[in-house]
Image (cartoon, rainbow, N blue to C red):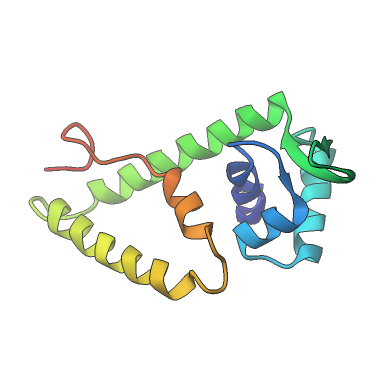
Length: 136
């Protein structure tokens, strides 16, 4: 599975979206999204459903297999982040995470004009740091 396909599954975890909404959220061209959607449909991860607000439009939704794949992607992302944090020198995790938070705030400000809402969506998938997790 490509990074773009994994991001597509993650973006649909909260519910079905129109292709134009999904394209904007992911910050990719419609043609690229269409190829990803086709590949994910072929694997049984997505289906097209009617749009309750517009009978002429369709939305893309995760199938049960797609929900399982999205959950697995989330698990892999969490484990990767954990492995990265474990490589940091002892005593530096908290200061490193504070710096990352500052960097992410800058990314949010810089990208809001091109991909409104994409940052918030992507960050909603990030687990919160707790004493049992990221804090030292």
